[in-house]
Length: 592
Image (cartoon, rainbow, N blue to C red; front, side):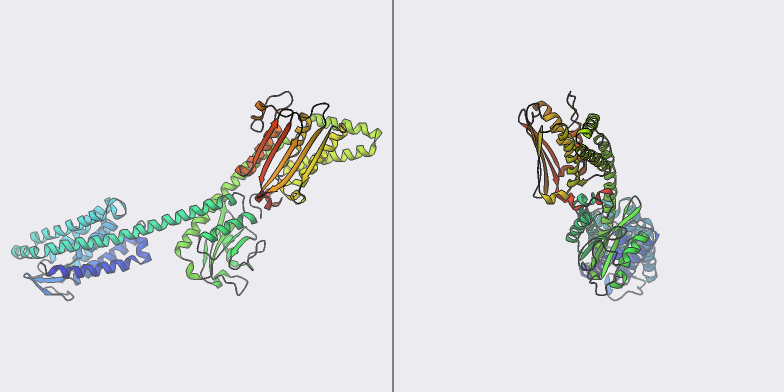
């Protein structure tokens, strides 16, 4: 018995080494990790059936209580038997693959053992098939991937080996020889097969754990990247948003270059190859055009597959993924590598996950933009309505000037035309330049000052370069109108200051007057809701604040400060980053 232990340990060690090498194979790892079809079950039957055959051939022959041979077992003496690790492979196969695999492996290993001969051949064949069926049923019920722990699996292996000893006692003849054999081999085979079962199970479960960890890391990484890129993809596919997204992906993946396109041109390219993969140029590679046409992921493993027009392009491999919104291809995401070996399966799976997440983000961005545009349209419809008294008074003023000052009347008529044109422009655009908004303000002031000469004065403090920045229309004009209509009392010359300047990454728009101010109880409502008042409803302030929140979210702010008889000051803070857009960019979510 003691002599048999190290010999059996050698046999199980051989199988464990083979199992470890097998665990490194991608195909085997995929079979272990995924659900089993007929093909996978046949592969498992072949693998573990081979384990059973190897166990038979490498077993230790026992003849009348003596170890007869340690060589390769081809024929066993009639009075002999084999001490081996056959049950090990059969049990693992059954636990992994279920009844079909267990039966298949049991038949292969058992029938092969039957061909080798010996007085225990029939008993060993029966016990092997029985072990395959039993472990297969147990494997289907519990499974190594679910609640079946390593120690439970070891216990099952020990029980199967013990059952084999019992079948040998029942079937093998003569009984005295069978009993003597069991006394000799029972402990070594049960112990060694249990140990081998533990090693084998740990290898298989390490595959499962490794796969789960890899997937968890990939998921965490993909979600992290998606979280970082979401604020930019919410802006749609434009040069600014795509460049930021590309920089984030380049930092968090092993890619050497990242490129994002829309349907027609490159929007961003960062990393290797930036000298000829240039934004706002046509696609440099045929590979991208194929993805846009076919709508599927395409991988390139060589420079020739990428088909870049520049012969010395450093990019040697790539994975190009379509970006979709509502089943329509709106662009591509490309991960480039300067060495094809860096494009691993892990990177491919990560890229595929990012493509799906980004496509979802673009769909959500479009839905959010449509919601904003709808809300914007509602607010603009209110804002674009000209106060009937203003129109009536403007016409009266112009008609009275026609007889006394025709030139001035003509100028006011032009200003009134400018005022109406600004109203129409504001109703069609989500953002306009500050310069156009100032034209709207000046047109309004010209008409009001003609009606009330010397009643008030307006000062402008605006840095010239800021006149090109984009702001929501109907932002300044209603504030100035509010100050003139509600802020100034009779007998006091009013003054209004309009100040626009940049502070860090923000644009500050300030209107300040020296009027009668707003009562503290009214301040808490203005900008948050409309109010009931004989002199106004606060609709203008509510419109401005609501539109700013719809467009910029938490990146902008609207504040009112007022003291009775001291005047009112309103701050509007807008993010500078939005002004990297052009006026064309804000017309559609997928504009380039």
